[in-house]
Length: 426
Image (cartoon, rainbow, N blue to C red):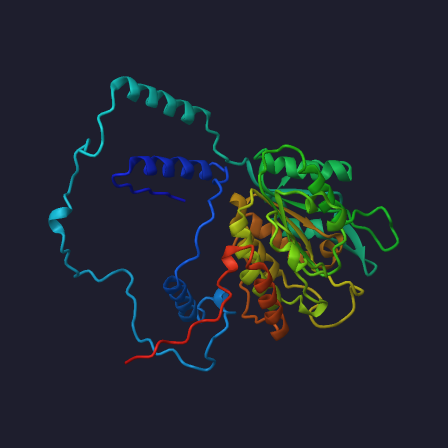
């Protein structure tokens, strides 16, 4: 990212803007902004009209209500990009080709002051540590060889055949507690940019397996330490009820935000106005865990809130397997590998790519293609092309309900309003 600041006569504002921009690019959060007034009605109407015009092109704007249903938009204007080349400048005399080094608006800086500034800049350049990682992706697992349907099946062999293991930095394993500490520590120490944790899996009846939610709870407990992580986003994509949150340190951590797709946890309306980030629940049912439903929820709710929250670390728990027996036929038994890869591609833009992905044991066994797609995307490869997929009608209604409940807290959802009808022409 290239950040360019253009300043006029207010050098103090320009200097403050440059300092805060540098601090944000180095990973520090920006300061809190004092309460600001609501936008003017004319500005709000302009924003809503833009949403109306663009929602047919951009699916992330698709679920805005229309004040006058069925009324076609009559605008015929067209924008040009880039601008037409034959446009003549009317202020040519005010656009000199060169500027003097010291303008009248800038006071001459004494040599002693300039030397002190130069010395301070050299110190900043010397002490600044650029967050470059040694490896793009880390992989941590106990064992991957499993027996499914009485037939030997090796996830590790499949990943190796696809050339995915060679691109991973394998982290050493130990006990369950040290496993999650190793994964999180590798990300925070810039050893890896992101890390995939594959818990141990076992045959039915074996009680030695590692529960993915236990690892999630261990990650939340480990991150309670002082690691200079200012904001942590937990994203849970799980069909089954999520029991870890009620007893998890993340539930009371003011630095943490939990967004869950699936489960049945709800937040009271009275709690919505509190200052600390409260869990955001999108309670999708079992048969709503289809590609179109999940993609719609990610675009409409998860990404707007996540980018406004601005996390320094993202922890994703992936358990898209149905609670019913794994070989039961039925609609939407699991998400497609392309959908899972698409989700990770969208989430990678958060926290400068610092992401911890915990895959449930069931998903590792029953959806090896999805695991392979996760590794492929996090290594920088393009995700699979996702065919057109639409959410179910009741999923759309659920998304609207969640947006209306959360817009009092998250400003990115405040335009869940009725779109204005087209103005009459006289």
